Length: 230
Image (cartoon, rainbow, N blue to C red; front, side, top):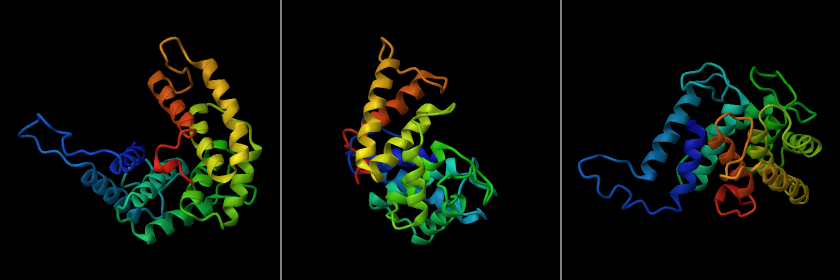
């Protein structure tokens, strides 16, 4: 939640004029988007500094890490840095080091536990994305995870929307031609799942979540947000 909220704040920071955001709410103290984003970054940095593995998990005081939560927080920090918020280089490098330890030569990425690898389209897509937007496409781990993602089938497993959310961005950053083909199949798939009320059925329980993740998959086509730019 913190990682995705930080990403949302970072994307809104340069696009929304919040001077009148709290108009009509006299007497209540509200933070600006920039202030909120700086606090979110501070929380993430403090949590990572305490974490012996250099990543994040489900508590800011966690002593271990996993590549799913770490991906959400890491992308949020990268977006904040791109928006002009100060994020120390040492924290970026430590997060990258964590992902490199979790990436095997075949491009599969483990979930938790240093050196524990496992096959997952979602995790390899997350790793591909963080290497790309951290501007480290020179790493051998990036080449291996991108190859893994390109060779996997779309949206397998029980987390189809979550997987597709990361696949869309990983492929777009790594191989535009592969993304074009993948994207065409996703548009057809999501159109077939859309309900009369506009929601998109999925595996995440509440339709609002499946719909939101699916819309973000399609949003790469428009590239309105900085995070979707190459």
